[in-house]
Image (cartoon, rainbow, N blue to C red; front, side, top):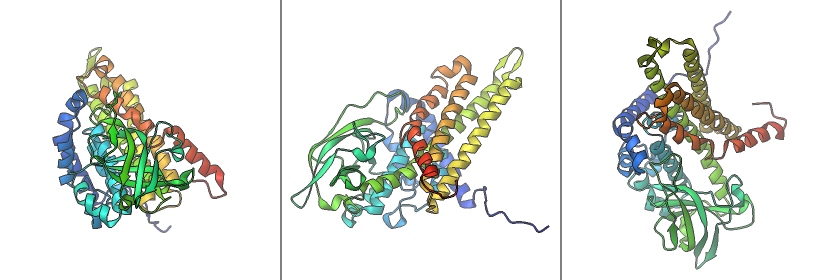
Length: 391
């Protein structure tokens, strides 16, 4: 029998191991020691994000021509996983900033790129992504915020909700209607966050993600320069969906990293905690629980990385795989954090331990970047829409 060569390599390259190590060190030194305090005090750690920018973490997959590192989505996922082990919320904000930065660097005019890219990729300026509206959540194509042509530019009116970083960032990537109803009438703009006519609502009181502000944004006759349009009119919804393919990989990765940290804490606790005269790690029922947590977490990680590769390779089914990875990894991440809390008993429920924070922070991952119910819609439509082979 001839030896068959397997072309699928699950091992990380030397470069990827170096990225992973750098991110791990940053998470352990800058994020983990402060995460509980940032959560407790609802502090948005801008300075920590700037330090992340010094390492290139604010422009991971922005093109090198715009000052970014130009890494693959797989490479970026490896980095985000390590960062989220230090602070879920701050890492999630970094992923949103990276997505918005990539959109500006990819589709922005030369004027917009000159205005923003140099400072976005270093973290000196921060970006928010503005798609969701009070009446347009899962049905994003029905958005009502409107940009009307006037005086050689546009006038923007409408509102956005649940915008991460709103009120504390510098540029907003805004999806607005410039034409007909539906997805073909949506365009994208890079709007300075301090433009006249922009108002920010109160910071929402949330279950988790307390280390970043979430606010409503209202646009009241905001004048937009024509050069702030990203790409061409009518391309905004397509851009938004392309951004969300990567965004789903990113948030899935944050779930994997947070769950890995929760698993690590639970394992250590099981070795230290004694009941009935021995460490609880000696009880087979709890060993089985830990084994299932680890097995599902490894499966989630591999699915996320496969989806990232599909996105990097522009696979025809990349959107479906990103939806699969987001649905599976965020569900697994939440379950692992919940089980890790349960293994701590009453101690898992108090803030002295990080488990309740992990539990609160990952819960929203099943909602944002497209709810997990919408992920199932995407997957189901792909399976039933044509006669291509099953995934």
